[in-house]
Length: 399
Ligand code: PHB
Image (cartoon, rainbow, N blue to C red):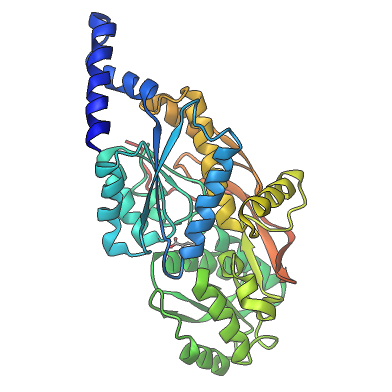
């Protein structure tokens, strides 16, 4: 640390002598940083807890995109920093500050959990550090608290479920129970479900919830059995989702009351859930079986590199890498050249394994949402449930 700091100081003074009076003091540190140092990339992701495998998949995907470009960003080497955020909202600000203040990252990549993201959002807004959100869908990040330096490469929490209601009504399921973890991601996923299901003529007979990351589902499943709805819709993810799927079957509900969900329910959990997952229908901005050369190559390369199958989280991490590459190339690695960098990120077209997508004005993907069903440990695409779906971005005013 000490030697890095002192050598940086030395470079600063040498450059000052060379550039001399022609440069303004304001520009100098940016130029020196761009030319002399590595791009500092910080991962703030869950590496423990119910979302641990989501964090790993995001990092894998990100590194894969960068490695496909020779491991560089805009011609510069990269130095990586990592913090395990434990999906713990109360440590969100402190953990993000570690990367920004202590590690002086040029870009913060994180995170998964919506509550933790609110901490990152505060630090990003206060410090101005470039913040790329590879999962967490919390509405505020690209609505009321949107910022010029914050870009999301994943979804907003209500985006996937805004395509779910019509699909359930098309199957004749007129009365549904909703169940979720009670925190921003579950509540905002409900918003999308409620809007789409009631607009299509459905009735939500009961909303059920339990605190994140609780997995004691038994009493709630007993309640669902007693309510006898036509269908159940839900938001769960990660390790908790695998347990919910198994418990749903073990409670005797599988085959009796069809289970639907925001697609995270069946992402990265199909080995752990086993046959209990077969037949679950979900809506999501990705599907394993998308029959495009882009997706097939991605899946093959990912499986070779990491000896596991990719999921939506891996795709989101990969797309975060693709986005950053486009930005870094546009400014030739000078990450301090912010207006040009943000302009490139805003106008990027991402050629993703999920299909091409663009950034909305509030910095959230405009993307197709697929209808999928689980068959033999794969999310099989049934069709497009919503074409080029954008989040409303309500209340977003870029500073
Ligand atoms: C979130 O907290 O925003 C979240 C977490 C896991 C998911 C999706 C959203 O799979």
